[in-house]
Length: 366
Ligand code: SF4
Image 1 (cartoon, rainbow, N blue to C red):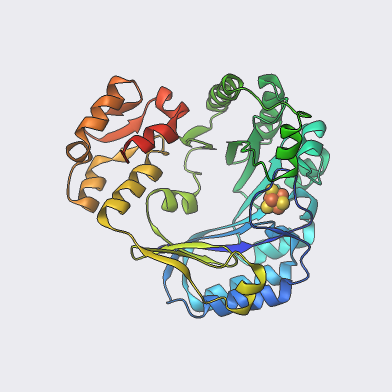
Image 2: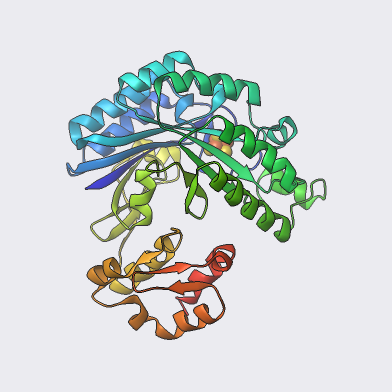
């Protein structure tokens, strides 16, 4: 079983904070889809449990393009009858026609990028929608889809905890099945990063960022959304299966420009250059066979992100030894510091550990 990720690298316009592999305009749509199908057809047929069409902005390209990709995937792979099939969409490029076509093509989960409900913040981010546009599209989507995620970004420059709570309340008020909340990562090479460097915008402090994070968890818990990963919340049974497979170290095939794959212990990725990818989509870069030690560290890095943590029995069956036996000193030190909790069943981050997850995880590399 594996997950299938298909990357659509086109967007209507580059957002002010965006450092992803995405290109404004979509003139190359047809040749790109042809290239992805060509790449697909050199992959070994597999059982596929989840499909995730991400971007970029998949909803920006024609629904015909998405249908061609899904038809080709259905021909090449054994996509399970109950597979979770997600598409990412932006409010400004979603239409009733596209929603209808997605549904007919078997897509059963939508992930819509709201990011903020505040006009001022959306403008600062360079997004093309406002909250009214989002709400209209969401309500249309709701008529056809019973599994919707809303993506939000917190800790925007100048944002107070109250500002973010306004966005969160409006998003949760629509009762999506899933909400993702990522703190803004500021990249110097983006227009937003440059404005911050020039002193035109004030980044939020570490304390404010943490206050927003804790308030988010508290608010969503009250609303019935459980935090199951550092940045992801879901109603019971509505966790994202595609991402869970990734966090739990499952195989996944990544198709498209810059897409990453992890199959049978090997990691590799495709060219990040659109022209090069279209010319030779089957060429894999930096093919790396992971050693046992690499795979163990990778497991710690990904599974500690889950609120349930690392299941000790599963870890032992994968790596032949109990995690505590392998990392006794570092685990003891992190437990003493209040960052980790060890039970007979699992090893997980405490609330304090979740605040500094990256540094806790890095300790396992020392
Ligand atoms: S929609 Fe997403 S991928 Fe596209 S430019 Fe904006 S942030 Fe980047």
